[in-house]
Image (cartoon, rainbow, N blue to C red):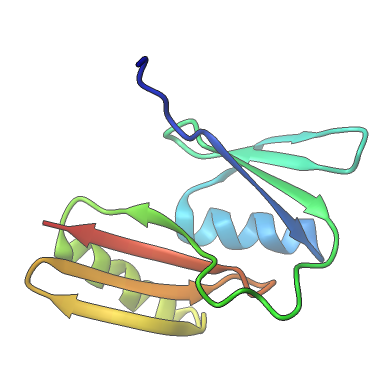
Length: 121
């Protein structure tokens, strides 16, 4: 089978500009890459070429508990550093683990989507 790579994620959001600013500040998505489409979707890209499609709408209420997406980090200290930055910015952290083989946390974006940052041995 040919190798495949996940390259985009679509999320309904209440305020696209607020979401663009959040994902730029904390996860490296570049507002200069923003493309607007006729259906109202705005797509922004990060340095890895991953597209985040932000569509105007209401996120689910309530959110399914396990629903989340994540960003892998190169080492445990990178996760800890990102956690410190997230907490300093006042972003809600809803879960955290710091084990020898796994370091991670989950935070909430402005619409309540769970975003995981993790490292696995």
